[in-house]
Length: 283
Image (cartoon, rainbow, N blue to C red; front, side):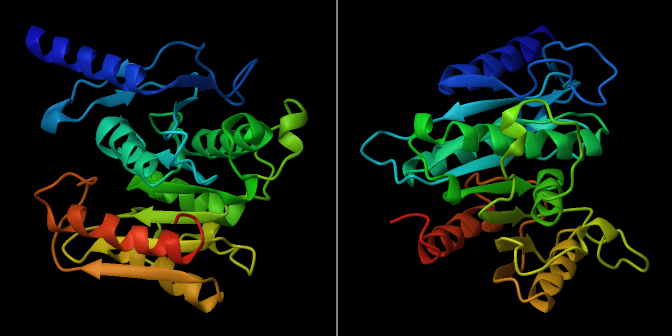
């Protein structure tokens, strides 16, 4: 037990050490949050070499910058999954940020509110988009090339942002909140919760798709129990005439991140890199 705790604490320290900076989202009170601000808590479940974080009351972003020679002006917010109960901060956060850095992206791993604070999580990602745009010059990024990627519950959060970016979910905090929180692109990786409508149809909150919904990349494995989420969502994007690329591979299950040894984990980054280049986001 003590060894597990020590390993988890080391993993948490490594996440912070690798990130160049930690940015808190809310300068004053956090909208709708009943608990006082405090550091996130490590989950009791740290199996599979996954650093899981929970009880987030002071949402933040960990910033991962590429080498100056690689910076291509594009940026991405990374939303780890964890069933809205916890956040898989390394497997679906820092490891993904490192991959994006190699492509020249500035990456921001989002510590959004959990557990079971889905509306709060939407407020957090909206605020995060605006903060990054307000400091685009500082990060040497193009504010029109800022997108999102999410995994599992994080993918659901990115889908919600893609369709509810113009919904006012919290009172204006400062001038930053006058900026748009529409993502330039969205990458939806093994999502859940997108088929929560009647008869496993599209989740009602996602029905606001139009020609302003961002270009999207959707990926899932056919043997994933949540697999219908991708099919329903991609078909809705297609019907709304939103440019979408979807990949459904035979095997991989769920929650694989991009670690080697899983066929789906090894496949999606290859497809994604081509898609990013095709959309002018990387060289």
